[in-house]
Image (cartoon, rainbow, N blue to C red; front, side, top):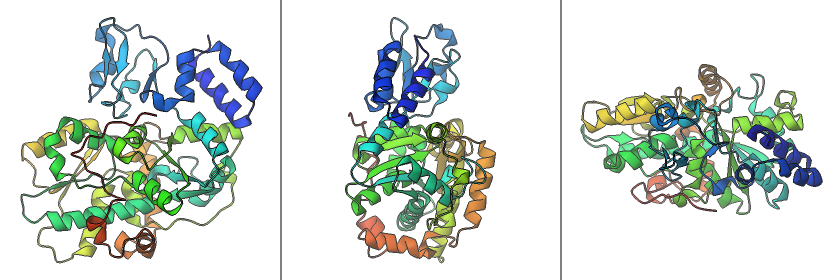
Length: 422
C-alpha cells in the first residue's frame, strides 16, 4: 500500500488536471480511511493518523504536549482525537516521534468547489502572507496567481483586521473605566481563545464579543455577494478549527494553509513572482501588523489614542508568545499579579508569522510584515477612508454602531461553540 503523502500528491495532481479515469483507477492502491480524509476532510478531526502508532505510553510525546488533552489512547492503546477539544495548535504533530500524525488537508475539496461553483470565488489572504511565496512577490502579483487557480479575486484580511481593531478599541474605551478593569483581546488567535474558553472560562467576561478578522472578511463578502465562495488562506491549522465553530460557520467555506497553496502552485507550474502587478488593497498599518506578536496590542493602542486622546486610563499591554507563554500569562491574570489592562495571546512563537504552516521562518515573516506595514498610507483604521466606506456599505453609519449594532462582527463567547458537522 502506498504512503499517505503519495496518495495526497496523486489526488491533488489528478484533481488539478481533471483526470477522471486516472483519478478513479489510482484509488485502488490506497487506504480507504486516508482517502476519505482527503476527499471529505470536514468529516474528520484536524489531526489525522496516517498509520497505526506503535509507541509505548511513555514514548507518546504527542499526548504529553497537548495543552487541551485532545489526543488520548483508549484501553487498547489506539490513539483518538477529541474533535471538539482540539484547537489545532499542531503540538502533537511536531512531537510525534513515529511521524504518524498529519494535519487536515482541505485542498482537494476546495479545488473541486472552485471548479464547480457558479458564483464568485474569493481568496481571503491572512496578513502573514508577505514573503511566503517568494520575497519578490507583491500582493498584486499574488492576486493574479490566485486568478490562475480559478479565484475571481483576492482580499487582504488586514482590511478587516482594521475593522476589528476599531471595534476592540471602542470596547476598551467603553468598558475600561477603572484601574481594576481589564480586557483580553478576542479577535486574532483561536488557540488563545480556546485556552480561555475551554480551560479558563472564568476570564470569558473580560473577552470582548468580536469575531476574528477571518470571520469578519468571510461574512462581509457573503453580505455583499451572497452566492460567493470564501476560502481563507494562512499559516494556521487552528483557523480550520475556528471555521467549523457552529456559531460562526456561516463565514468561511474552506481554509487552506500556505503550504497547501504552495502545493497547488507547484503542480500547476504557477510562479507568483512572474505574475504582472495589479492594484493593492487598502488596509492601514494597524491591520497589517496583526500578523506578528504584539501587533494587535499596538494596533488597538494607536487606534484608542485616535478615538479618545484625552482618556485618563491609558491602555497598558502585556502579551504572550506561544502556548506556554499564553498559559503563564493567564495564570498571572488570574492571580492579579499584573498591572496591564489589555492582554494579547498568540499561540505560535512570533505570532501568525510563526504558524505551523508558514513557509518561511517567523523572524523573516515579521520583518516582511513590518516593512509592508511601513508602506501603508494610513496609520490606524480611524484614518482610513476605505474602512469607513466599507462599514457604510455594510450598513454601519457611525463607528460607534460597531459595538451597538454589530451582528456581523460579533460573537458571544459564553455560549456553546461546538463544531458543526458536514
